[in-house]
Image (cartoon, rainbow, N blue to C red; front, side):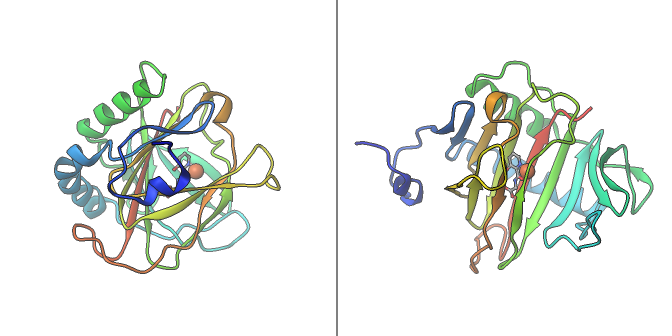
Length: 218
Ligand code: MD6
Ligand code: FE
């Protein structure tokens, strides 16, 4: 059967990789086997470094709840965006990056053609129904030759994948619980965002979506 965009939303469709760019791919269900290991780790991370709404340099409150684990964490405030070894809330190092998350992300990166991916930062985003993430580029990492690996958990979302300028048209990609997306190379700096989350309840995570993005930031 030919793969169409609609198949992404059909649970019965085969879990074939969906290439959405030359070097950007969705691996449907790739993280499902790791969820049981990841959820207790996630609880530990959130207990140590709770979700918070960061402020943009322009003074706006970000709607997405945000925290990090790993040697470096992404932070935003009136001074700008950067990676920091300390959680500004606690002035302590971020929670340790779970080994299972490094392994999973290295395997996913390899499946997408990126060998030896060694993440040192994991941004954890929490979306409630209605929360969106506006179009942006991920450009605060030092080395753009390294890909980003994104793990979706909980409620499904519609990811917008654009071009190299904000005004280019975007494609829409469904991301469901357990899906992993890898992008890098020629696609590394493409604009992207998340449409407002639809209300719903996920059996394991309740009324939210959690997205983990693993990066080599430093
Ligand atoms: C999200 N993700 O899916 C937000 N960035 O909730 C991102 O902003 C993102 O998924 C770079 C690469 C993959 C991503
Ligand atoms: Fe991003």
